[in-house]
Length: 508
Image 1: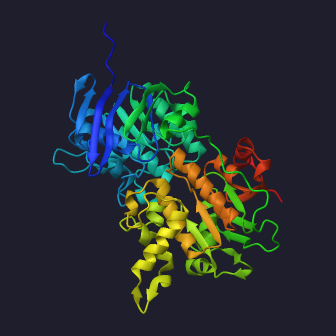
Image 2: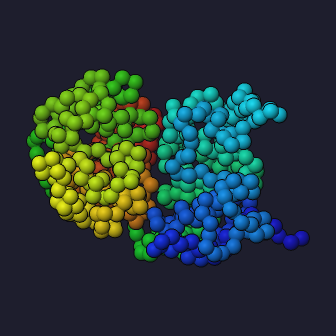
Image 3: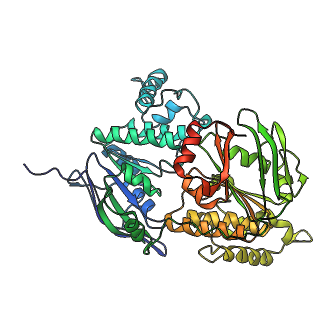
């Protein structure tokens, strides 16, 4: 008998945009029932390739075959009818609609007279959510009321509501805690056991080892490796293919003598800070030149602590002081005026003006510097933004570039440049490398360490324990809103931290 053809073959795919050749003869082959991991730095062509596969972009050249027959994916509907579903990193859910309405959007169960059968839809949605291991999600709930992790599950249920044969998952674990990642992998194993193929995109190389069967690596719009075995291909080789150079998963060395390391006065003092229902009393001190990390699972109160220190949330009790001066609770204006800056977890939604230039994004918190008799000195604004972004090696080196066109790493640099220009003394970083590729992560690590070495105080939150341990000088471990352990980062390892966040008890 002749062997079964691959489920999907993309051969010599090309795609150009004005001034950019995004895909330059890319090949991809996916077998039924496998997890095929697609790797590459930001700008390598991954997003363009999956949009071609989803029918959102039309290729300029090349051929796509589906179950051995040539196909033309003229639209997302055409791709879905073939059995190809795509779950993007930026979830395209409608927050005002219910869970069930989102799952069956566009193919709602209806009567013969096209009246939507709401009860039938909710029952079917509930069955899909149960299959995914989340029966607690109410099909009648508005999607906007769900957590990021729950919204991810709804997107997966929507994909499975069709007769899918291939699911593309773009950074599906980015907003999930370790338990949710384990559940995600269980779901992937379940669907692939039924013969459904998964194209899995992630910056977390350790996930590839756990879940992947084969790996294709893109660099600069070309496939530099196609169908490598995920389990046996060395990580260093994969990173070298992605970046074009050998890159260790290393962090910049901690300096033996940091500015302010021996200072008696902390720049940031948090005393008994509490927010009912989110986190119990937190006490911490942060000195100039020091990086303190908050480690814990999603829901442990990490981000809520940062946002309360920043004034975006009003505490139930406790005080925040900068250089000994108490801040007005729940006031972002007071925090910024005192020298606190925040790089939030969702930088696109919460920090960046996506339709504006790099200059405007960098200068937005310092506009009074450029005001002259009611007019903005655009030249001075642009020069200051360029100086701040050059200090961080933001690319491209053009302050007029729209920030939406930058890679994730360079967008994060734009946020950091904003606070450098403002002259902040305390920098709050919430998931600073989320959605950032391997090479750009190393650059951001170096930037963060250099800023600390120059005297900036940094309070860091990350879901990746190695990142916290590699960057921080001290670590506070959180579990269910309580600090259960505090230690020098060099006294901890990943296993110890995970033990504490799963089963730890508060320490004195």
